[in-house]
Image 1: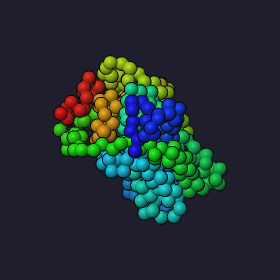
Image 2: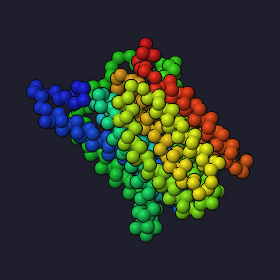
Image 3: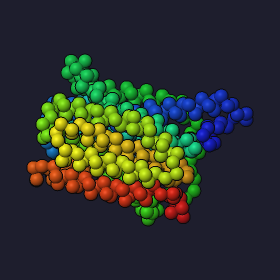
Image 4: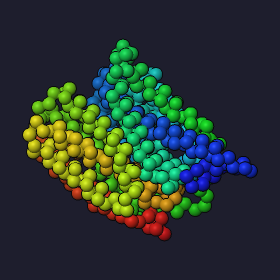
Length: 411
């Protein structure tokens, strides 16, 4: 079995070969980037063709609503189980298995025209994405402990690119396939197959698994303030993101935008995540305190939401851009997972706890906003809720960005 030295892979051969070590390190980088591209394809590829899918399969409104909530539920449940699975089978093997499961699920849900099969296969695909969500920050911490900023930049950027690519390319693929939504959704299984190739090559470089008593299990993390702060920050920023992706088009149309203009605005809003993801992790890893970034992103949300609520319709696109930059809170949350831990094992535990609890928090956001919007017929009360969420984001983020490590609180 191979072990990992700081920022490089070591082999068990009697004589180390630096060229091979560097090649393996670059292979890990390639594997992380390709895997990250796949983590949201099962989610964002469905939305553009949801009407055709629901009509073809005869889905009721309740079933369609269930389909839209499956991602957060799957990310929470399967993400929580990831550290235990990694200790049992190994991190490289588990990520390879997750990509295979993701691809199989994506392919299976378009092979049989059945609502049950589509939902079940979607859960299978989402489980692979959930495992990858937790594993990749762990792999970054294990393989590149002194380069967490640049590597998290690659991870967050690839995640943003994959998210936007699946959302933007699904309809053109459907049109090229003569309107066949089966092809438009199934084609993303090919991307998962490509992403599995580097991890096949890395099976022989599986890191040593942590042995001994697990001091960073869920029961231990529940008793630490830092774990809850990370979960709170991750959950509040995810809640804002899900609300914006789900309700921004409706808000724009209520303010006079056409459906086409609303769609373009949402695409630009999503695309902003790419340059933001390129900048935020590297900056966060270099500065001594991330608290100014916590406050800065929250201020952008407040300014943007205020403009959306009270500004003239002609300036609405400006506030959409402001909130889009504020979404840099997501790559910042990913970076904090590595910055607040010393070891890969504890990073895995914090990643699982923070993301699982965070996604459960986030999942309630679009539903509550929808209820408030329907009950009041306007956007004032939903935005009051969002302002309260931003306040909670500052409180939890302020603690999470402090100069502390989870290992110290566990001790």
